[in-house]
Image (tube, each protein chain N blue to C red):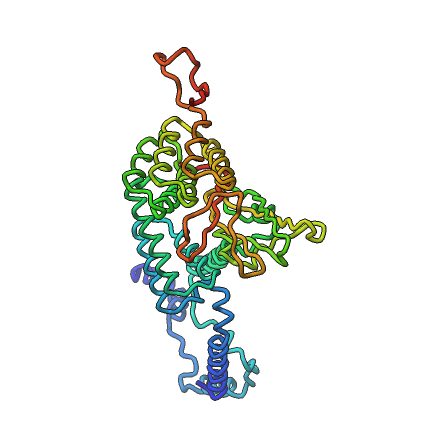
Length: 223
Length: 200
């Protein structure tokens, strides 16, 4: 190697070292581009482990990442974020074990929320057994909200299950939710509000020949 | 072959013999010496100072070079998609978002968020669709904010989404017109929106 080449190689090395040093000094800017970089190293490591476990189990990782980012946005302590992410992971795993491999990510997410709010695995399984090719996402979202607003868990789960078995559609559940929410704001007891509003939801189960001469799919009002 | 030569005319035989006779050029090596001296005396072409940097050191087969180039292009494309997926482009026109998605994906839908907050100086919406970044999706008021109605349209992928409003950068509030999630583990609740109906 000639003298010129040696000098050039040294210059290249010097520039490379300077670039590395600059990159290290610019670490805060890099962290801004990587939201999880705001966690402590230990917390981030634990969350990465949870994400890996979810991938191995075939669970959606989006709810877990969202939960971590939500905590960062709310400036929550890193350790609490890890606890919250782990709680979501466990509920997703429980939901998957009940709903099975074919449940959509939305269903899993909604079922995980319902389990976290107190729905039992047996109640969730009962709901899932009567799916009839329909997604149970909206009923579970409404159920979780109702329990959150103070409707007793048993009342909420039984009412939602009955409506579900009667073929209630997504719009029915959302309409039910709006009515109950208005009644609660007006001062009605949450459980009573749900029972009252549930009576207004039409049954959409196809009529059997023995039940009468109604054409299939005709709506019937509950008493 | 030899028999054939013997049968030829003697003059022809002589020509053939002369043609076959090895020719020794400058057996003493003087010509070689002169050639080398002439080459040494020839001035060498001036070399560019940094030409050695540009000289190819590794020879690649065309197929390998093509594969490497395709790989670099692929890395660039994947990087672009990841940057887009993090939600920082969410406030761009929805047409731009739709045109940049992969073939076969489900088109995003514009969802209108509304919050009435008369005393707020600034409001934004955060959620799983923008990485819970409070600066990503600011909401705006009409008419100078006299009625305190803050709105924003957000292109969102179909599915279940969790979100919250942020007032003045620090105060998280739920959407009163949407179902809520249970306590998020941080002492707050969030709201839920299902875009595009249920998926089974």
